[in-house]
Image 1 (tube, rainbow, N blue to C red):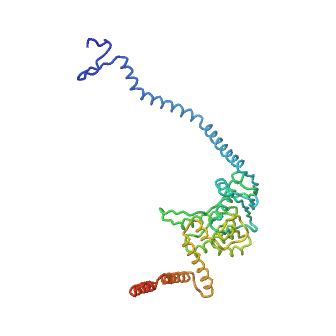
Image 2: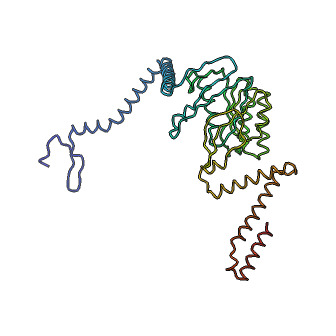
Image 3: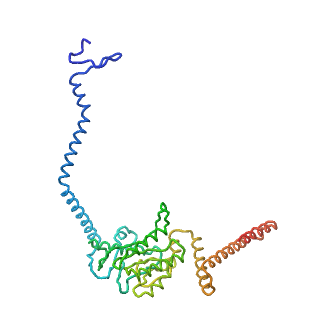
Amino acid sequence: MNQVPENYTRKQTLVNAERFITPELKEYEHKVLGAEEKIKELELKLFWEIRDKVADEFETIQKTAQTIAQLDALLSLANLALENNYVKPKMTDGEEINIKNGRHPVIENIQTNESYVPNDGNFNHTDHQLILLTGPNMSGKSSYLRQTALIILLAQIGSYVPCESASISVTDRIFTRVGASDNLIRGQSTFMVEMQEAANILNNATNKSFIVLDELGRGTSTFDGVSIAWAIVEYIYKNIKAKTLFATHYHELIEMVEKLDKAKNYSVSVKETDTGIIFLRKMIPGGIDRSYGIEVAKLAGLPKALTDRAYNILDELENELHISNGNNKNSESVMVSIVEQSDENSITNELDKIDLNNLTPIEALAKLKELKDKQTKK
């Protein structure tokens, strides 16, 4: 203890030691322990000062932010137009929409395996008020619907558009019914959501609107779906009179549209080859009565045995329905007939596989009973 400096103050006594502190250390300890609290007080004070200054300049800051946002949006549209060869559309107060060699602004930039095929779009209230678009799956119908709506939308907001030239009438709203979705939490099926979206269009569209409909009426039976789609086409054509682009696989609508003076049938061209089909992605006048669904299923990788069987069923359905036109048969009886024929073919195939030379009498009787049981169950 005699060796402890005079300015050292005992702080703590331990078993084999003593702890001391100096006035300088005490002062430093106080600074360290109080620093965090002082930092928080200083930060809060600075925040209040900044808040008050910002509040004083609130209107100026808001106007500046809005100007920067508008400049950013316009600069983005300008860069997009410059980089992708967009053109300035001609906006009119008339009724016509004429798009030459229009392109999809997104797909053309992400498509790498093939070049994007441009297409024209012409709508008016004289002979192209409504266009019914038919064609194979995967041929580009939905892309064409979306690109037409996007070009009209871009023109309305003052942007250049992806096409060779465009003359577009002022459009009050663009209505779309595309894709498939449900709302199961509210107890709404895919078909119910589809009908609600269709109802919204029919109740709000005007003759200055542009309507895009893709595969309407798919979520119910074939006859119900065709009937609803047919009635909606007629309602839009006669009551709303909006310019409309309607893609469908209901080929029954083609004949109906041909009877409407201001409506036209268009289709997506396809080339059939010995190895399958080639999608040409070009819209041409006239409807097409085939959807090439089985060919698309083959491209998707379904087993060959399955697609071969699908071709057989398709041939049988078409033949049976053709024959039934004069015999008052409905589609249900035709399906039953095909199923029964399928069962008979199955039994015939089993008989063909039996090797009679290597079959004992007992095994033959057992096989006969098995086939008999199958026939009885059928």
